[in-house]
Figure 1: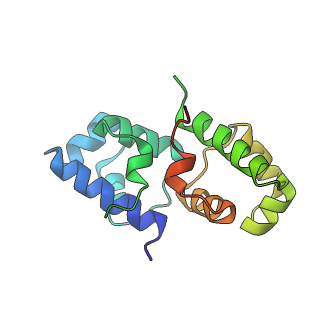
Figure 2: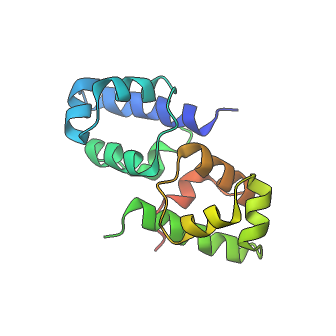
Length: 71
Length: 71
């Protein structure tokens, strides 16, 4: 069973790639650091709800979608 | 428009009350502090994804549900 950190990091990577934007571009839109986005995508960070909100807004998806295990 | 912190805190309070458990009981199940749960329910804390996971598991709901604006 995947942890919520793993679900979020996988969804983030998939949605970002499908949107055709780089980690650098996403970081710039969010006002977060490129290395932070990379660490989040590798499941290395215990991301906060406010940063989840920034990232989901930047990707134009619902935060709840990024936390939902995709079939 | 509600912030994600507000959506989460409202959903948490609603789901906890519907489950018929107190903040103290929820805190005990989660291994978190009662005053922390109270602060989260008042939207005062920038909760982390790992604590979102603990709380949703304790309440037996999906984390994504707690982050979704309820109609």
